Figure 1 (tube, helix red, strand yellow):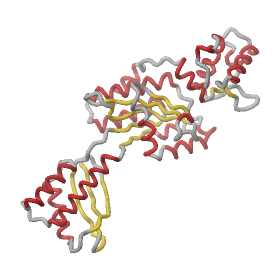
Figure 2 (cartoon, rainbow, N blue to C red):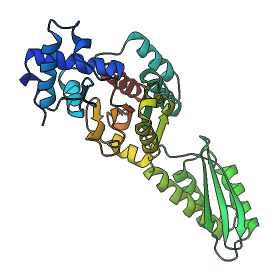
Figure 3 (cartoon, rainbow, N blue to C red):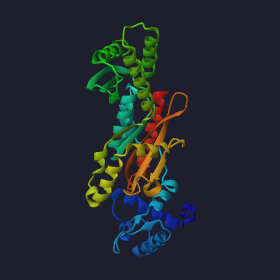
Figure 4 (cartoon, rainbow, N blue to C red):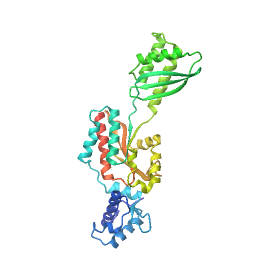
Length: 343
């Protein structure tokens, strides 16, 4: 356990804060000479304080002759006890709000993620509410006497392809007939609505469609609906921002981070941990299992629906050397802006 910030002396708090701020700004170890102009202490006295901070586990030095950098414990202490989050600047607020104004929610979420990414120089992420897709078109491509490729197109442009098994005797003509009916009569409905109407048609035989083929499609719509409900919707923007001028010095870490960002399910699980809080949650380095190898930080905040319920999470993923005092308010403001948009 790290000591609470109140247990540090004034001198230690001052030196610790200066070291962390200089490191976050430059990404380089901080030496006593660099700090000498900021405090009324000699380099020798500064080195002595830095040594005390290192003994307490708040600072470390990567090389024998180098200056100090904060440990993950030190960064956590800084974030929790020193940094005072405030509203983002006027420029940042305007940039975020411009991406949300008069937009459909799906577009606003993607735009907000991109805006956060650009402003923070991190990867922007958002877990979107689970929308039930609306049907636009259904078609089949026969593959063999017992199988066909079903192609479901949603009104949002999403495309779902599945190989399905066909009941014995199902003809290509019967599949085409049902597909044409679905596209012509059920387009614009949610999958649940389309399934219900199709089953009514089967039961009441209002349309001259093959009942076996229609039942196959109705079952498929039900399965697609359940999959859509359980599948997390994750938007990631700005991975390229992670390849900044400091990346060359730590390519292995950046490669690991980019690999980790490919695991969408794990990212969603991590971000879901921010649902319980009222504001931003900050995961630093090994505090989260997923990004422990790359030593990355995650700043995330929940946003809410019209009834005050949490419907998603928005945030950024980047190196531990983040300007937390700047980025935390931006993430928090974006979550509040999305809440206002939905409400």
